[in-house]
Amino acid sequence: MYSLNLKQQNSPMNTIEICRHRRPPTFSLFLAPAAGGSSQPHHSPLCLSDFVAQVEFMAEDETVGIVPNLHMEALNFISGDYGPFYPQIITEVPLWLAVALRKRGKCTVRSLIEDIRDVRFHKVQTNLEKFTASAVTWKNMSAMEVNIIRAFSGRALQAFYKHEQLTPDSDRAPDTQPQIPSNRPRRNLRPR
Amino acid sequence: MANYYDIDDILVEEEFVPVLFNKAVNGVRIDESTEKGFVEEGSKSELPFWLARELHLRKAVTISSPSCFNHATRVEIQADAGCVDLRSRCQYFYEFGCKLAPLCDKTIGLLISHAFRIRYKEVLHKAHTTACATASKILTLLTKEETNLYEAAQSSMAAFRKWRMGGPTLKMASVLGRKRKPDEGLLLP
Image (cartoon, rainbow over all chains, first blue to last red):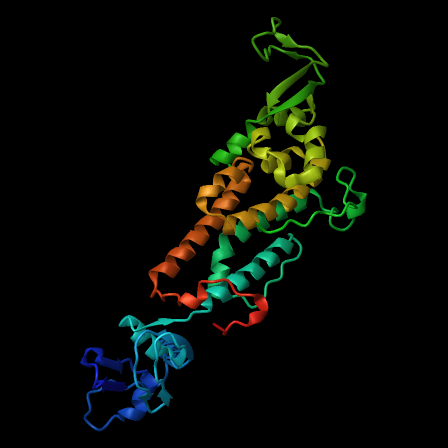
């Protein structure tokens, strides 16, 4: 869709070609209306894979911060102007442009994903800490987070359930446990 | 008979339990030291669990708590379950306890569920964070069941890391390398 050829007069070494070649299926409806006799594949009703491609395409329009390592004039696109770029100065650009620049080694992309993942996974762990066979509550977990704890939590729940079967009244009347003193405050284990 | 070929289940039932004979049994020699060819009523012995259970069902023996569920262990578990070396006491502490509880002492059920609840948290934190190199220290304390749990978590984490490294890698900007104060805000360099 976007294609530009950009040359800087004073530094011919810095010739960059950037093109955004992937085209989402729905866009082709508007850009290339099926004329009579056209052999172009016609995407009529949206199928699931169209959505995936579309969502991915839309996601690429999200802006991210990059740290360029080259000096470059501002880029003027239909969607807006980005830049100018100075080395080590953080600039906001759409993700597809960031990826293109990154591929050519012209910038580093600032990524918060790792931080977010760490924080979220810590929350998942504190949640896991709480569960017993009788009460399990998880909300708003991504598929990948579920995938990480799937094997572990499955086994743990099975064990909890098995032990719970042996002591059917232990949860309802914890004070009557003959062997284990539960009135003593339990030490909260610090995650290590 | 669902567990007939399960090696873990077989090993659990191999554990010895102390028994007290309620009846005199003829034609039995428990170990080589007994000269007589029969067992007197009221004699004590140690039998593997699978044999003791069958005899118990026939009211021939009374099972008492084995050493891994004795008073000393209970006190240790009450003090800090996370640090007790259950592996050396019984490789299959929980499974054994589950099988034993209905036959000899109902409080074993409470003990193992308490122990598991505490030790589970230890496993949870260590399994998802610790690198493989430092893992061996914890693994020496864990029972077989806990080790399985630990390894399940480790392999999921390893698979996740592999997926993350395999995809398009973004180089981390140098400003992200250093530690931030929490109130400084995420977007400030």
